[in-house]
Image (cartoon, rainbow, N blue to C red):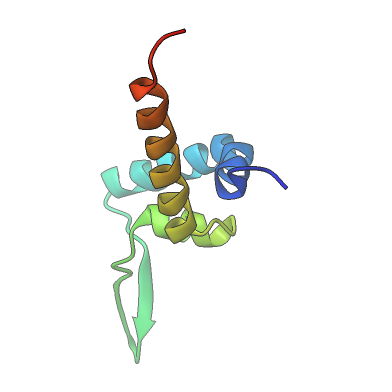
Length: 84
């Protein structure tokens, strides 16, 4: 089992995810937005693109944050150890 499985998944899709995110941003610059249907109306989706990409690529954002906290603690511990 890998130490940071969600980060490994994220790293594996980062190129695709980045390209999709840039495309959606480009669309926004053209006045085209993501929308969802509410009854007969279309309303802005109101969902962060990062959240949509994470869901699409099956990345658990809560687990990413938990792994980041562990990484930070490990870096702090390593920096606090006396030099050999």
